[in-house]
Length: 123
Image (cartoon, rainbow, N blue to C red; front, top):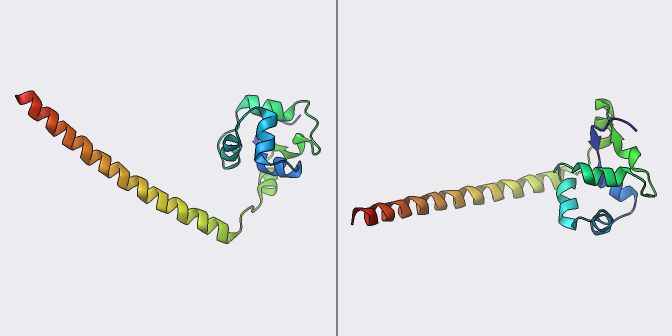
């Protein structure tokens, strides 16, 4: 087997005509975990071992493994349309703005609590 540098879980799953839930069930993980890995989270070694070992997949997992940087570029290719990418980016920007606002609110609450603690300590 090739030295693993990159594995395309999403293309592997689709080539084997599996839903995220079906793949998750066969690997003993949750569907949301499969989704996270397909979105870029690292694949745990135990999960990768389960995929690459003896399971009789209709399309072998080895076809989605590469150790060559040129193959990585060829295999990854464009998977999202520009519209999907722009929509995803807009959603992330909006979520980031909301999180920043929440952080600022929490900082203000923390400062208020510290002031209350200082006042209580003086008494």
